[in-house]
Image (cartoon, rainbow, N blue to C red; front, top):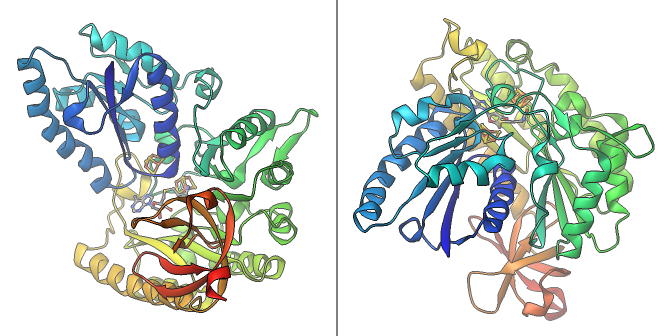
Length: 444
Ligand code: SAH
Ligand code: SF4
Ligand code: F3S
């Protein structure tokens, strides 16, 4: 049997897509390979969001060249396919830049992958980066397996055109899957063992899917329908845009216990001037107000965000406004990045780029503050009882690992029989990337 090795870069949507592509390729005779050296095909599912992310692809491809040569010397063959957002953004240019690559396939064409791979096996180097009329979701095979916590893509693409961002170009226009297709896939995932679903979309709370009743469902309505499914214990959704947090969605945080009290809501900056230049469509105070309303609806909700420092024209005062917003809101965790100019985006050609040393300095200051907030948030859990959904075996024998409602990684000594169920644990200590806990019945 032929063997497939998949490497995934970037966001959760890529993780979801990699699983779907793996399932499609399994039907055309590929089994998982333990390592690249072991593989007959290597699939790199790439990310274009920042320059570093995109460059990683080319350094990885450089490393694959000798592997491919060795395979060929031994009379074998290695098909190298590049999928994802770099494939969409650079297309045939990848074939020119990296002789190792046989297939280039953009995110909207994954249902075509088995045919493209077959062409590559016959010596062609196909490139497919159209945005086809048919949806890949309808064409891909049904889901094969599911983990306890599963991703479910419900929305793709973006029409927001933030001036720093490549996503509207790499993923195309905003598109919502029909509500029934989402419900069917959810039912299937639950039947295969999923107990938690994370609904995915580049702009997941812009969801507006056609419903069977002829209407349109926004995300709040969809969450209510999913929460009613027996067997499902937890729901999450990511990533959201602050301008799309509508009343119905905020309300469902207040009255749907299966919706977990943790929200990733990227604000990017605390300065109105910068937010406007980013085309973010909201002011810092709009964001604060949305957080206040979420906290009224669900007092224990914890927040997460993305931040960009050193956006073109960002002054010391602008940056100070970001720090002030962080202090005021208080985040349980966050991601922060130096602004990276991306080809084809409006901000990249501005002539007021911030010097690299200033970006480095601002990032360090912001991350110190965010780390402090995260440590305080996690530290507050020591000695407390929390629920954990056990997802997998832990790193040490006899341990299981899972997540708290607030997405904290937790491990505790527990029997395998507890996998897939929620247990109450007492948090003992905070470790660098997780909380160590004991089952409540044993802590008593
Ligand atoms: N759709 C999501 C985020 C998508 S990209 C949203 O609207 O929030 C994930 C994060 O990458 C963004 O939130 C942003 O913080 C960061 N990012 C995107 N483009 C970037 C760039 N050019 N430079 C640095 N960070 C960037
Ligand atoms: Fe990018 Fe903005 Fe769309 Fe998010 S909302 S994907 S940051 S353009
Ligand atoms: Fe990266 Fe594309 Fe996701 S650019 S962040 S893989 S949508």
